[in-house]
Image (cartoon, rainbow, N blue to C red; front, side, top):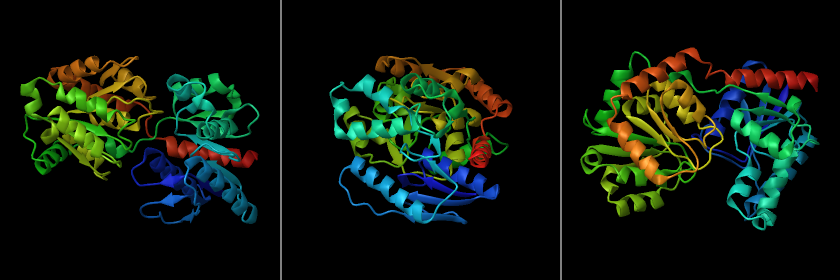
Length: 374
């Protein structure tokens, strides 16, 4: 089949973007042709994938997205495909990969009813309804059980249009025979002593991931523990606000920000805890990556994959509503807990016994089935 993959922006270290590439590779492996339509592409283009960058000059994001959708319809009318697979919510999709959470739920929780009438929010809500409303024909590839319940509650999406997928993390995140070597290499590069503690915050979009919460918890550590601890944030984002916050909290010398990297398995082995107190997250793939690597996790229940941390007995999940003092106490306790080795072993065992890896292949199979039915 000829497949059109559609997303607003590609950059190498975004979770949605990585999922898109892996599904595209699985589709190509199944014999399909893949074109990608996007507003912006950063990084290398995979072999065998055509990328069409659509130029749209608009100031507001909702106007830009609306023009993008119109341009795609025009291009596909000239050069048709068998299926259109979207990685952002928009009209005209045959298949939608649900990497993002429910906007309607988020706006009801955080905004007044009046603000939801603003053109920007009205646009995004309309595009969400174009995918999830009962009148839509779009098939939905869902990766978060929690979000599945939320979407169907708000939109009444027919069950037969929803297909649940397992997670799809890379197997190289699993702890291997070289775990000790990777840990030593990481700690040597960053001049971290063997008995120092490394707190990792991994993921682009520092504000959503709760990096401000992480910094406050780190600064609240007992002085002796804080002096031998390091907080490292990794991701693609503007870090100036958080660097300023770290200085104001008195931990600027213990905090650093790294751009997105390709050596995440080494990073995971080098850390002592993954701290991920996200405000709102559809899944949180990094939680699973840490679990299978044997890196204890401290996170919030607003992450769609937080339940895996509990099932694996690989750390702690803080309930809602969020309380900063609870996070502060949990971080200090976990960094000093004798249970750390137990959390690590439980996570590694969970990674060996659960299917946390097959999402791209199953997504490609579903796309093939949907295309055959159409």
